[in-house]
Length: 195
Image 1 (cartoon, helix red, strand yellow):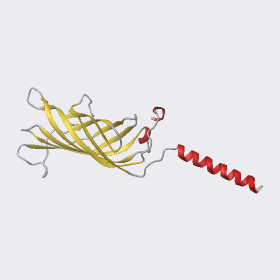
Image 2 (spheres, helix red, strand yellow):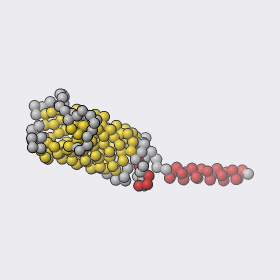
Image 3 (cartoon, one colour):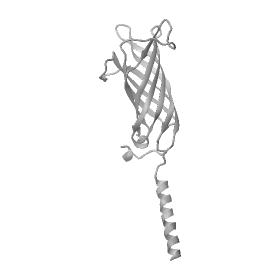
Image 4 (tube, helix red, strand yellow):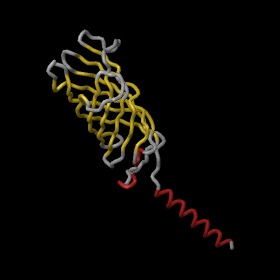
């Protein structure tokens, strides 16, 4: 009887080990550092708030979480405000309204993020903008299904197209995204597991 119990115990321990190895582990907290480039401009999306216009960003890049694309939608204010960090004679400072971003990674996993804060410092002579967005991660699909955390996007955008009034409407953009992400599965998921 003692031998049978030992054999059963070994079998249960072996099965537990096999099960544990077959399940993707979840990281406690992971630093994120990603570089991107792409375009920014007016958006056809109408965010239902009292803002002057809506902006759309389409970026691609790579970093510690893998290769990705990012599409942002965000509301832009009616008029500039004052700032001690953006106060040159040719600078306009804007505090952005609500928005959201969706990251799509090479394995098909999506990472959802809400814009919690955004600012733009635009030089009206050079038509160059310095933009900073703060995101709150709200989950995702695949390996980001249980993700949470905060990311900060820092962008430099240079106007490539003006409207009839000389206002910039389409930008070339480069930048970096940094922050921390928790709850990320350590393994890329199969396409069938993305939802």
